[in-house]
Image (cartoon, rainbow, N blue to C red):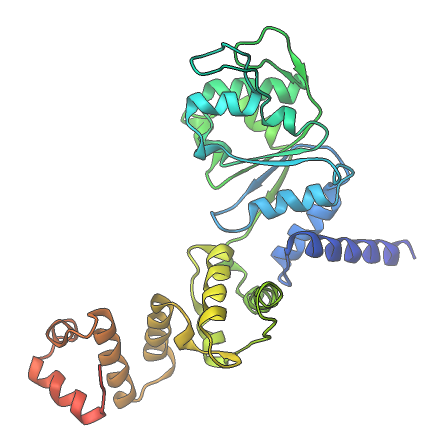
Length: 328
């Protein structure tokens, strides 16, 4: 009975997580991530989220906050790499009037603004060593000094950090403090790359279609099998963020009620044609037509350049265009 109740609580937690952030998944890797978020949300431990850019590390942080007792308090997200070294310290910890040129008033930093809530430090590996030292004090003493200040400021925040770098390697290189790494890495969550959880691609696609439908004209679109096959097999170097952008584009460009390969960006269309050529279709005529069209698309209709790409004479290109009825 206790085991059944535990399973039910975790399932309810996953539903709340999906409603709060949109994090979904059916693969073992994503289910493990979701289970971990639900499990650690109620406690105040520091969390380090790792994963490639675009995998959804900020969504993890927002999910932890949304399911935690702090959910009605501020959530402050800071992209460390977006701030210069001199500006970062002031933005994080605030400054006193006259602390530097242009400091005409005292100002609270992100840590004070996040008091009682959660602060998310994205791209933590880009933080300079001097600022790392001050962050370590916040983690250990729950206090900091404003820039130009003399009196410590106490703060109650949960810290979640994220990185797409190997912090252990940065520690070895002397670019990241070892003691800070261990203070941040109390609980670790790794977000898998989309190419490693391709079984989740269809779920994500339909999730994004529903999302854009609610935001726009309430159209509910389908995805053709050919387009779905391409999207599943594509490698997604930009991960979930890239997939979301592709579906948003397809949603906007789709004329009927079904997303087709031609609604996808050119680089993914080209990938689909290459995939068909190399994996599924051994018909010489079909592949010849596909390669000619692909060459013309790449060269924007320049037949001489297309001939060069194809390794054939320009006269052969004209002959095949006429033979196959291809109109660039």
